[in-house]
Amino acid sequence: MDTLHTPSGLPRTVSNPVMGVTVTFLTASDETGGEYVEAQVSIPAGDPGPPRHFHTGFEETFTAVEGVLFMDLGDRRGLRLRPGESVHVERNVRHRYFNDGDQTAVFRFVARPGTAYEMGIRAGFGLAADGRTDARGIPRNWLETALVFALSGSYVAGAPAPPQKALARVGVLLARLRGHDPALRRYTRP
Image (cartoon, rainbow, N blue to C red):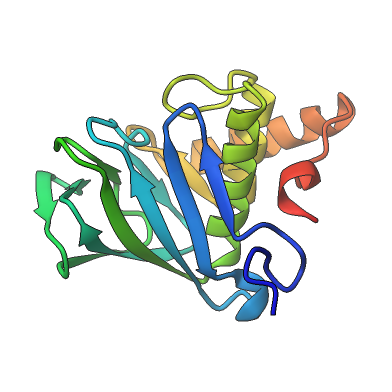
């Protein structure tokens, strides 16, 4: 059995060199028919994590494995998850994870359903590896941002989902017209 790749041939481990975050897909979406994804995530000490965001198409469960995982969840700020502690994030709940500690934090992550999460991570991390994102992992090119938002069903907090979805749809159309691959297959397909 190939432990370095998923059944479809994608690498199990992807890294974001800009953020220093590594994700290992323990169970990838192609192993569950998209029902869920389980991953182990490593986030370095002092990493601010992604901006506050929300997902319209999946829910998440975070479980700390090593170190302390910090989270903002809805109106609660600076939650601390210690090894063995979990938090569940429903769809459309604004949140972010980060590491405000002095050691690497490792956590397990389950997304249900899982395909959008996995494709969003693969696309975003691939763009970061190619030097196409800012320090927080957001693509510099707004068309690529629209593609990642549309692919993952993930949006930034602070604005309601409907206008962001509409902008993402327009961005996808413009990206297609400009020759971009809307599925970002370079990062999401073997």
